Image (cartoon, rainbow, N blue to C red; front, side, top):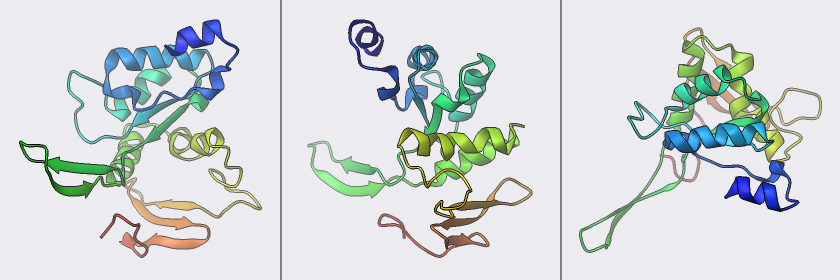
Length: 182
């Protein structure tokens, strides 16, 4: 549908952002082609083997880069904080859970462990996202920006997170919790 819209309308490719495209292999391939037309595409950082249905974010990044697509058109996100309802057989809500954001940290580590350099990996989760969302004070370190920093140890694990100049995680200890975190 996006390709058809690009062909018959004046809507520019940059306004389309297919998300979670690595959950389905044919969808991922179509999204890669759309990135070549100027669309941004988003991968889901989901844990473990994605099986036959899709590609893990790590595998999808490798495939995207190997095919020579524009890495500035690629982002990685998660369903962290998203609703995870559980229903009984009659459709009654049993409990409401919320997805963890750990998948992003795991994906980040896995990408670095795969041999990709930090300067390749970080934009997928920071600078490219900030550019796509038109957040000029995010995704980079520069005078006048928000002082959002990530500290990584020698094993590619996140050791510290600073947001707007305040530590949220320091020495691997969470200091600030979000609405859906314990």
